[in-house]
Amino acid sequence: MANLKTFSGFPVQNLSSDSTSVGQIYYNSTSGQFKAIKSGGAPIGTWASGGNLNTGRIGCAGFGTTAATAYAVGGETTAKVAIVESYNGSAWTEVSDLNTARMYMVGKDGSSTAALVAGGELEPGTIVGNNEEWNGSSFSEETDLNTARRNGASSTSGIQTSVLAFAGGTPSNSALAEYWNGSSWTEKGDLNTARYGLAGAGTYTAALAYGGGFPNYANTESYNGTSWTEVNDLNTSRRGLGGGGTQTSALAFGGDPSYALTEAWDGTSWTEINDLGSAQQWGGYNSSTTNTENLLFGGQGPVATTQEWTAADFEVKTLTTS
Figure (tube, rainbow, N blue to C red):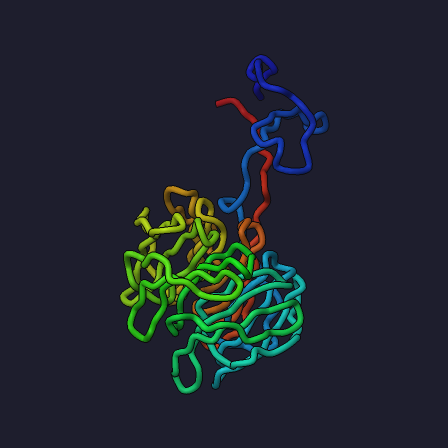
């Protein structure tokens, strides 16, 4: 065990209940050990099984900033559905319907009381630009996307009046990006790589786009409000994956074909971390920006499976000598 001299020059104090004490050292009088408070987040997160959807489906959209405020919207069973379900952290409840039943929506961002879902695929395979806004209890029709498409991604800022929707299929691979200001869509700078089935994170002025197909891509691009820049690739190329977070701290999980992989982005590169409990692809995911409460639900099968990601803001490590 290290002695006090080892810690000369470092503050020794009581543990804070949040992440504000990261980098501090304290003495645990019960164990007789010195402890260091280190950053937590994605690298120490784990997946666990959650409650199943009432209606298993592929290609549903999702929003909600925490696990306990998540919504699953639309998708396909044997036909396109308009079903909306809410999650309370353990179980799903059917609450409302979309105005237009569809799957593979492009813009899917917002909180439990204010969200947006746009684009998608109708029966029997018609691609649309339909845009609907959620007010906490029901959806209302809003102005359509300028370019109808499916299987795209969007920012995950949780603000339904400032959404960036990008890429997708028209049906050919698209690189288009459009910005929603609460009343209309405006075309923005195109991605460098046209693709569909990708994941997105961040805000409308600081977004991240990663993965997608076809063929499967590992490409990651960063957006500055005007243009996209290629940055370091995912370790594993895939489409139909889930994601969330910010431009500098994001997650990528699952994907087609049959991936359980999870990767964390630190603003520079991707690192493989704890896998999903089982492979899952083409499901919905919530709009988490913190990467401490992410959800993946539904998917190819169709399945009703929900998997919950949790990660603490910080961790405590016992200090030892080498």
